Length: 442
Image (cartoon, rainbow, N blue to C red; front, side, top):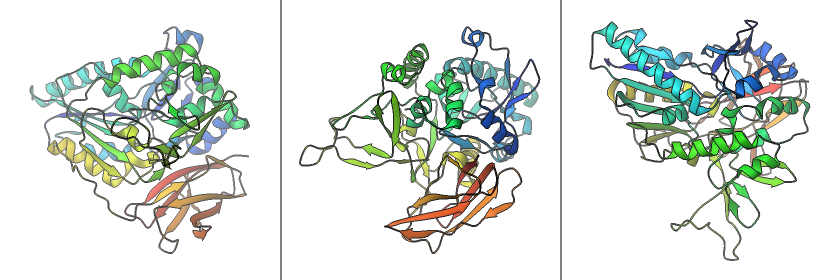
């Protein structure tokens, strides 16, 4: 067992948020209540003018997620219960592991300052309790949580940092979330999303705007054309450049792979559309083209939310890959073992643990209750050795057992969610089960 302390830092949407004026839970609801909240819009989560000016007393983070969460267009999250429980099994006392809940709507830079204070306070408390004045701390961060660790002031008391699916170079999905849309549910969600500095901090930094014959970076002007906030975009781009220069101490990264992932964007008439294409570079940084000078496009992969290259750390190459969705990356058995190795032994496997047979999964963000939906599977030659199970994310009850099929060279799955709700689809048959959420709303 390690004598050191541990701080678990969740990702975007990974902390429960409460309205301090009413005592009501704004985020972190049970799945059946989450659906109703999404249908009503997320107006209570939109930043107010007072919050923009720095008065953040209205909304309080009260803990890590207790229930699954899902935001159409971005990602879903499983609770961190299993990860925290297992980490508490490799420290001297359960109190050595602390959880850092934060208001993920707010800028990464602001939350990073709060994290720095929390790290100092927890380490001081653990040293006093354990009698080990030489104890240090290990940071275990998922998704946006890794950006907080990167933005935190350097601290020589941090023994190691483990990031799980952290989008160091952002994600194309964040730009699409800010784009005008036609769906009623999506319009309501966008109205709140465009006010959240935290979402702007996830905008892609890599060359992602496909202009047909070239690929360029997203700009502040692009975000303004989408109807986004110019000040929030400019602040996010500046903060991102500052973070990129920072090397995390003893950094290990777990990167989700083999999941078809929105990696690029096309911009047209004030809207952004995501594509599953990516582009390769020559050693001199020039884009790879075919013999006719046309851009060579390749399928984009990652964890379904964060493109693979975006999750690769800038300053070192200690990482492991895992064929898993962003939704469950931090809760997978492989991720938990990896985290335990870092915390207890200070090292992890540098090479991929998984071989052939890694399954990729793509599902629609939103489906209609009672109507058939269609998804696709990749990474497999046929449907015969794959088993799919659709369960109610709130009750765990089995709803459907979708049967994979092959058509037009692709392996697909179809199923039906018979009523409004949040559902969990699990696909077995590869090296590790792959899990994703499905939201059914009228």
